[in-house]
Image 1 (cartoon, rainbow, N blue to C red):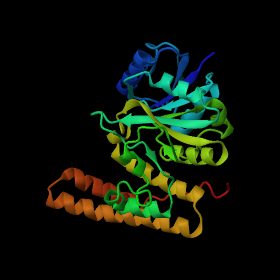
Image 2 (tube, rainbow, N blue to C red):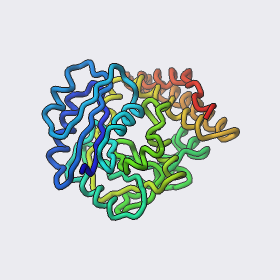
Image 3 (spheres, helix red, strand yellow):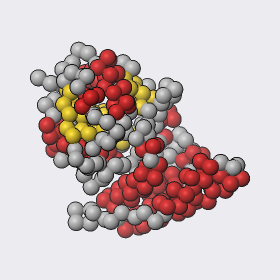
Image 4 (cartoon, rainbow, N blue to C red):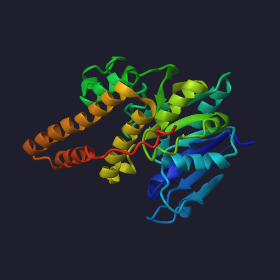
Length: 312
């Protein structure tokens, strides 16, 4: 009997994957688990040279990059565990987090999604929970107003992160770097919506889970290190482009009428605002990095995904 199936989607970063699997094996004891690595067509080496070093590890190799959502669903379909842990490949374990979360889930009488505390590489607290998108927080986020009101539940959808929660708390969204739930619940929702390619799939999944099944919980009694951006920071245009696509897709799927129009308008006007702000800062500060970011913000203005949800 397998307690937890740990699903890790990988693309190219074999050294990062190796470190993740090593820390997982070093710290995960006292439970029966399997690791399912879904490789989205790595071209930098042989992924099997990494996965073969670790016990209870299953490898699926795709012939192309099918995206984060679809790859996780691929792993869930063959998982043998009672629970699933969706885990980023750029995570490092520093304690027996999987067992702690498993024991907490087993003591509950309800179906839940659980996310744990995420830390940056320097052990500082990382933003890992948020409220669902709405018209107001789309405006406050796009115009940096949330930074002026970091602890405001009205003005900042990330406000709970700034309160440094020490007790398990119901939230709207937990970051997909560590997302734990029962296999039964995951499959009952058909997993992640595969129309989301790389970003926002956990936002949509948590939204559907809360509407149809149960609660989403932030469990701060265990921590992992999430390096963050290990894949996307090596291709900034891929990162920024897909962030825009993911956000607009959330609006397309879940917003209508005036809410949809204002949210989309605030996003693109916010990109224009960032383009100007970063360009001015880059020029006067002689900062090539800011100028490069400004250019990417400008390019995003012309990115608008086809609405694949209009027949839902």
